[in-house]
Image (tube, rainbow, N blue to C red; front, side, top):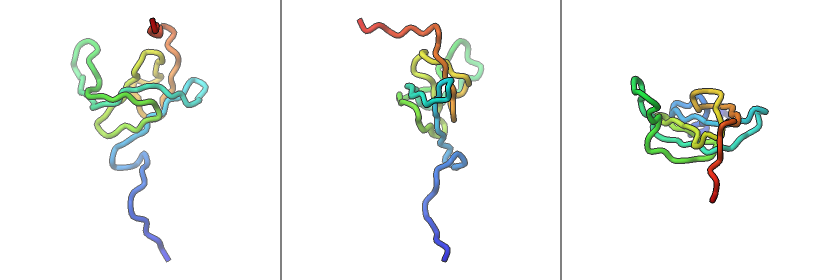
Length: 103
């Protein structure tokens, strides 16, 4: 007979609004990087470079972003090919990035 499976499958079409952030290098290989995930802040009309998120936690990609949350790169070591960090994002090395010395 027909079997009924209770529960729900999580997918990009899920009504909960969660979505994955997966970061890849320019060769399309998985590239785990630190990202800050927090509550999205409405920055429309604000001057300068206002904070995009508040109350963030740092995670290493791949990471799940909930509805109402936004992610940003935790360092400037990589440059994102897209302005919005969501779904699959390709990163490239930032030629101007200088790692902090451990002195």
